Image 1 (cartoon, rainbow, N blue to C red):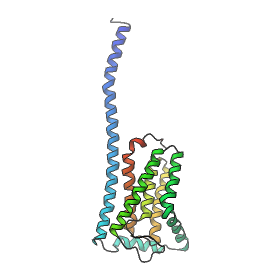
Image 2 (cartoon, rainbow, N blue to C red):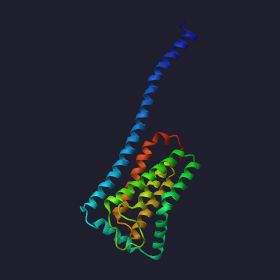
Image 3 (cartoon, one colour):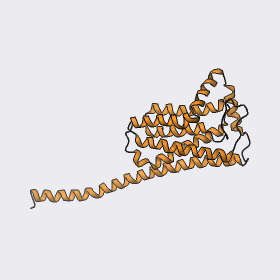
Image 4 (cartoon, helix red, strand yellow):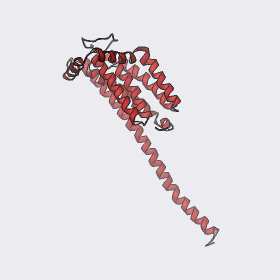
Length: 239
């Protein structure tokens, strides 16, 4: 059997034995890389939330002056560009990011879009992350109990830190940013978040640290939820 079928059979068996450890090694490497990416996403998300929480505690404890230099500087810039046109745009963002529209309508529209584009797990992440962001924002508002700027142009609820408009926009933007790979779409999402944050300053509804804290909360929650759901999200189409 040194030639012919017997020899070929022994060669095939040796090839399979050589392939199996290599295949297992590659599989373990892929799984380890995926687990590492989940840990990184969750870790970064938790860190962002903690930064916002610590900033809120420092504000509540009076460690940071009211307003601090950064807040005063950004509020001055926002006030200087007020005009009928910019205020009208800011009021549009104000309506889009408050009440039932921000809590139910916008997330529901995004869920429908994600389902139509065959991203059911991303749709679930939107629902869970948006709900957690809303709850965490309300908890921080109650704890910090920060006063809003005096020249506010709109009626708002209690507590200035963190900004609910910013946190709601940030969590949705972050989930969509992770769900889609389109560079153009990602640029639009980032611009939308920046516009929402800027509108809160222009209307005098928040200090700069409020909108920054809200963005940290929203992005942090989105990273934590999306990170934990990463194995499911990998099943969805790219693009």
